[in-house]
Image (cartoon, rainbow, N blue to C red; front, side, top):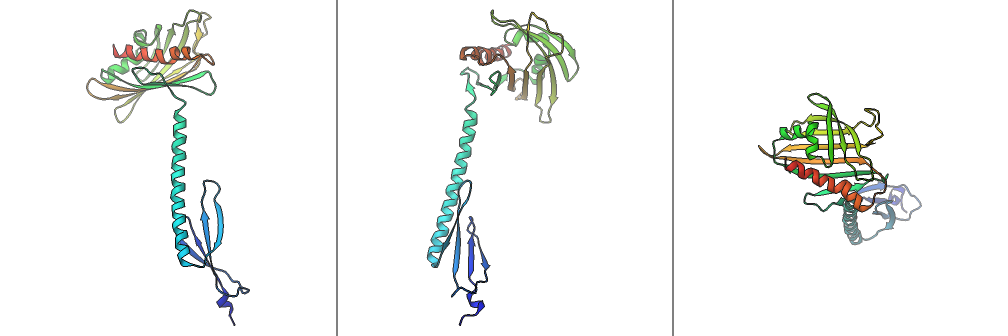
Length: 263
Protein backbone atom coordinates (compact mmCIF):
# COMPACT_ATOMS: atom_id res chain seq x y z
CA UNK A 1 0.00 0.00 0.00
CA UNK A 2 1.31 3.39 -0.97
CA UNK A 3 2.04 5.87 1.76
CA UNK A 4 1.31 9.55 1.48
CA UNK A 5 4.99 10.13 0.80
CA UNK A 6 4.80 7.79 -2.17
CA UNK A 7 1.97 9.65 -3.83
CA UNK A 8 3.35 13.20 -3.72
CA UNK A 9 3.90 14.03 -7.39
CA UNK A 10 6.51 16.43 -8.71
CA UNK A 11 5.53 19.27 -11.01
CA UNK A 12 8.50 20.55 -12.98
CA UNK A 13 8.15 24.04 -14.39
CA UNK A 14 10.29 25.04 -17.34
CA UNK A 15 10.81 28.70 -17.91
CA UNK A 16 11.32 30.30 -21.31
CA UNK A 17 15.08 30.23 -20.76
CA UNK A 18 15.29 26.48 -20.13
CA UNK A 19 15.81 26.66 -16.36
CA UNK A 20 13.93 24.14 -14.26
CA UNK A 21 12.36 24.22 -10.81
CA UNK A 22 10.56 21.41 -8.93
CA UNK A 23 7.43 21.96 -6.85
CA UNK A 24 5.96 19.23 -4.58
CA UNK A 25 2.17 18.93 -4.30
CA UNK A 26 0.37 16.87 -1.61
CA UNK A 27 -2.08 14.69 -3.53
CA UNK A 28 -3.04 11.55 -1.55
CA UNK A 29 -5.62 10.50 -4.12
CA UNK A 30 -2.94 9.95 -6.80
CA UNK A 31 -2.16 6.31 -7.37
CA UNK A 32 1.46 6.89 -8.23
CA UNK A 33 4.11 9.52 -8.79
CA UNK A 34 3.66 11.65 -11.89
CA UNK A 35 5.83 14.18 -13.45
CA UNK A 36 4.11 17.16 -15.01
CA UNK A 37 5.73 19.57 -17.33
CA UNK A 38 4.61 23.16 -17.97
CA UNK A 39 5.66 24.42 -21.36
CA UNK A 40 5.48 28.16 -21.81
CA UNK A 41 4.66 29.00 -25.40
CA UNK A 42 5.66 32.59 -25.82
CA UNK A 43 4.04 35.14 -28.06
CA UNK A 44 4.43 38.89 -28.16
CA UNK A 45 1.41 39.79 -26.01
CA UNK A 46 -0.07 37.90 -24.24
CA UNK A 47 1.91 34.74 -23.45
CA UNK A 48 -0.05 31.59 -24.16
CA UNK A 49 0.41 28.94 -21.46
CA UNK A 50 -0.03 25.27 -22.14
CA UNK A 51 0.20 22.43 -19.61
CA UNK A 52 1.28 19.13 -21.07
CA UNK A 53 1.87 15.84 -19.30
CA UNK A 54 5.30 14.42 -20.04
CA UNK A 55 6.36 10.85 -19.17
CA UNK A 56 9.31 10.43 -21.46
CA UNK A 57 12.71 12.03 -20.81
CA UNK A 58 13.51 12.07 -24.52
CA UNK A 59 10.34 14.01 -25.27
CA UNK A 60 11.23 16.48 -22.54
CA UNK A 61 14.60 17.13 -24.20
CA UNK A 62 12.95 17.58 -27.59
CA UNK A 63 10.43 19.96 -26.04
CA UNK A 64 13.24 21.99 -24.43
CA UNK A 65 14.90 22.29 -27.81
CA UNK A 66 11.59 23.36 -29.33
CA UNK A 67 11.04 26.04 -26.66
CA UNK A 68 14.59 27.33 -27.12
CA UNK A 69 14.05 27.59 -30.89
CA UNK A 70 10.71 29.27 -30.31
CA UNK A 71 12.31 31.87 -28.04
CA UNK A 72 14.90 32.74 -30.68
CA UNK A 73 12.14 33.12 -33.24
CA UNK A 74 10.23 35.48 -30.99
CA UNK A 75 13.38 37.48 -30.31
CA UNK A 76 13.95 37.83 -34.05
CA UNK A 77 10.30 38.85 -34.50
CA UNK A 78 10.60 41.55 -31.80
CA UNK A 79 13.79 42.94 -33.36
CA UNK A 80 12.14 42.94 -36.79
CA UNK A 81 9.10 44.80 -35.45
CA UNK A 82 11.32 47.38 -33.75
CA UNK A 83 13.29 47.92 -36.96
CA UNK A 84 10.05 48.30 -38.88
CA UNK A 85 8.83 50.87 -36.35
CA UNK A 86 12.04 52.88 -36.72
CA UNK A 87 11.79 52.73 -40.52
CA UNK A 88 8.19 53.95 -40.43
CA UNK A 89 9.17 56.80 -38.13
CA UNK A 90 11.66 57.96 -40.75
CA UNK A 91 9.15 57.82 -43.61
CA UNK A 92 7.60 61.13 -42.51
CA UNK A 93 10.74 62.97 -43.64
CA UNK A 94 10.84 63.95 -47.29
CA UNK A 95 14.08 64.38 -49.20
CA UNK A 96 14.36 67.76 -50.90
CA UNK A 97 16.75 66.14 -53.41
CA UNK A 98 19.17 69.05 -53.32
CA UNK A 99 22.96 69.05 -53.57
CA UNK A 100 23.01 69.38 -49.78
CA UNK A 101 20.99 66.66 -48.00
CA UNK A 102 17.91 68.54 -46.75
CA UNK A 103 14.82 66.89 -45.30
CA UNK A 104 11.44 68.26 -44.32
CA UNK A 105 8.17 67.04 -42.91
CA UNK A 106 4.71 68.40 -42.20
CA UNK A 107 3.57 68.17 -38.58
CA UNK A 108 0.21 66.69 -37.63
CA UNK A 109 -1.35 70.13 -37.32
CA UNK A 110 -0.84 70.64 -41.06
CA UNK A 111 0.43 74.18 -40.52
CA UNK A 112 3.75 73.54 -38.80
CA UNK A 113 6.83 72.38 -40.69
CA UNK A 114 10.21 70.95 -39.74
CA UNK A 115 13.47 71.04 -41.67
CA UNK A 116 16.79 69.39 -40.88
CA UNK A 117 20.14 69.23 -42.65
CA UNK A 118 23.89 69.08 -42.17
CA UNK A 119 26.47 71.12 -44.03
CA UNK A 120 30.07 72.37 -43.81
CA UNK A 121 31.37 75.93 -43.79
CA UNK A 122 34.93 76.78 -44.77
CA UNK A 123 35.53 79.09 -41.84
CA UNK A 124 36.67 78.83 -38.22
CA UNK A 125 33.91 78.35 -35.68
CA UNK A 126 34.20 81.85 -34.16
CA UNK A 127 33.65 83.48 -37.54
CA UNK A 128 30.58 81.30 -38.10
CA UNK A 129 29.14 82.37 -34.75
CA UNK A 130 29.68 86.04 -35.63
CA UNK A 131 27.93 85.58 -38.99
CA UNK A 132 24.89 83.98 -37.36
CA UNK A 133 24.57 86.37 -34.43
CA UNK A 134 25.36 89.65 -36.15
CA UNK A 135 22.02 90.72 -37.62
CA UNK A 136 23.67 93.12 -40.05
CA UNK A 137 24.96 90.04 -41.91
CA UNK A 138 21.55 88.41 -42.29
CA UNK A 139 20.62 90.13 -45.54
CA UNK A 140 23.74 88.56 -47.09
CA UNK A 141 22.84 84.95 -46.40
CA UNK A 142 19.23 84.41 -45.21
CA UNK A 143 17.03 83.64 -48.19
CA UNK A 144 14.91 86.68 -49.21
CA UNK A 145 15.88 88.65 -46.11
CA UNK A 146 15.60 92.28 -47.20
CA UNK A 147 16.01 94.03 -43.85
CA UNK A 148 17.63 93.13 -40.55
CA UNK A 149 18.42 95.00 -37.36
CA UNK A 150 19.88 94.17 -33.94
CA UNK A 151 17.58 95.33 -31.12
CA UNK A 152 19.44 93.97 -28.08
CA UNK A 153 22.75 92.20 -27.61
CA UNK A 154 25.16 90.91 -25.00
CA UNK A 155 27.94 88.32 -25.01
CA UNK A 156 25.67 85.23 -25.10
CA UNK A 157 22.25 86.38 -26.28
CA UNK A 158 20.38 89.05 -28.16
CA UNK A 159 17.29 90.03 -30.13
CA UNK A 160 17.01 90.96 -33.80
CA UNK A 161 14.27 91.86 -36.27
CA UNK A 162 14.17 90.52 -39.83
CA UNK A 163 11.91 91.29 -42.77
CA UNK A 164 11.51 88.39 -45.23
CA UNK A 165 10.28 89.15 -48.72
CA UNK A 166 7.21 87.11 -49.68
CA UNK A 167 5.69 86.33 -53.11
CA UNK A 168 3.74 89.19 -54.69
CA UNK A 169 0.34 87.85 -53.58
CA UNK A 170 1.39 87.75 -49.89
CA UNK A 171 2.55 90.32 -47.35
CA UNK A 172 6.24 90.42 -46.43
CA UNK A 173 7.05 88.57 -43.21
CA UNK A 174 8.25 90.29 -40.05
CA UNK A 175 9.92 88.27 -37.30
CA UNK A 176 11.48 89.16 -33.96
CA UNK A 177 13.99 86.55 -32.83
CA UNK A 178 15.88 85.96 -29.61
CA UNK A 179 19.14 84.07 -29.98
CA UNK A 180 21.21 82.33 -27.32
CA UNK A 181 24.74 80.95 -27.46
CA UNK A 182 25.79 77.92 -25.43
CA UNK A 183 29.38 76.69 -25.49
CA UNK A 184 29.86 72.98 -24.79
CA UNK A 185 32.77 71.19 -23.13
CA UNK A 186 33.66 69.33 -26.34
CA UNK A 187 34.28 72.59 -28.20
CA UNK A 188 30.97 72.60 -30.05
CA UNK A 189 28.62 75.58 -29.85
CA UNK A 190 24.81 75.66 -29.84
CA UNK A 191 22.89 78.66 -31.14
CA UNK A 192 19.12 78.74 -30.76
CA UNK A 193 16.72 81.13 -32.47
CA UNK A 194 13.28 81.56 -30.89
CA UNK A 195 10.71 83.96 -32.28
CA UNK A 196 9.09 86.54 -30.01
CA UNK A 197 5.64 87.10 -31.55
CA UNK A 198 4.65 89.97 -29.23
CA UNK A 199 7.99 91.69 -28.80
CA UNK A 200 6.71 94.85 -30.54
CA UNK A 201 3.23 96.08 -31.59
CA UNK A 202 2.17 94.64 -34.93
CA UNK A 203 2.45 96.55 -38.17
CA UNK A 204 -0.36 95.97 -40.67
CA UNK A 205 2.14 96.27 -43.47
CA UNK A 206 3.68 92.91 -42.53
CA UNK A 207 2.55 89.42 -41.64
CA UNK A 208 4.00 88.59 -38.21
CA UNK A 209 5.77 85.24 -37.89
CA UNK A 210 4.56 83.76 -34.60
CA UNK A 211 6.02 80.24 -34.64
CA UNK A 212 9.72 79.67 -35.19
CA UNK A 213 12.38 77.70 -33.33
CA UNK A 214 15.77 76.90 -34.84
CA UNK A 215 18.84 75.15 -33.50
CA UNK A 216 22.32 75.28 -34.99
CA UNK A 217 25.10 73.09 -33.59
CA UNK A 218 28.61 74.04 -34.71
CA UNK A 219 31.42 71.47 -34.60
CA UNK A 220 35.00 72.61 -35.24
CA UNK A 221 36.56 70.31 -37.83
CA UNK A 222 39.89 72.01 -38.31
CA UNK A 223 41.48 75.42 -38.46
CA UNK A 224 39.18 76.63 -41.24
CA UNK A 225 36.31 74.17 -41.27
CA UNK A 226 33.10 73.96 -39.26
CA UNK A 227 30.34 71.38 -39.52
CA UNK A 228 26.79 72.56 -38.83
CA UNK A 229 23.75 70.53 -37.77
CA UNK A 230 20.59 72.51 -38.43
CA UNK A 231 17.03 71.88 -37.30
CA UNK A 232 14.05 74.22 -37.41
CA UNK A 233 10.34 74.15 -36.80
CA UNK A 234 8.24 76.95 -38.19
CA UNK A 235 4.62 77.84 -38.72
CA UNK A 236 3.01 78.71 -42.00
CA UNK A 237 -0.18 78.46 -44.02
CA UNK A 238 -1.97 75.13 -43.63
CA UNK A 239 -2.03 72.46 -46.33
CA UNK A 240 0.42 74.05 -48.73
CA UNK A 241 0.67 72.37 -52.15
CA UNK A 242 3.88 70.50 -52.93
CA UNK A 243 5.43 73.19 -55.14
CA UNK A 244 5.01 75.82 -52.41
CA UNK A 245 6.37 73.42 -49.82
CA UNK A 246 9.45 73.00 -52.01
CA UNK A 247 9.97 76.78 -52.24
CA UNK A 248 9.10 77.45 -48.61
CA UNK A 249 11.18 74.65 -47.08
CA UNK A 250 13.66 73.27 -49.60
CA UNK A 251 14.65 76.07 -51.94
CA UNK A 252 14.94 78.65 -49.16
CA UNK A 253 17.14 76.35 -47.05
CA UNK A 254 19.33 75.36 -49.98
CA UNK A 255 19.88 78.96 -51.06
CA UNK A 256 20.60 80.04 -47.48
CA UNK A 257 23.29 77.36 -47.14
CA UNK A 258 24.76 78.30 -50.51
CA UNK A 259 24.93 81.97 -49.46
CA UNK A 260 26.69 80.99 -46.24
CA UNK A 261 29.25 78.87 -48.06
CA UNK A 262 30.02 81.72 -50.45
CA UNK A 263 30.63 84.34 -47.76
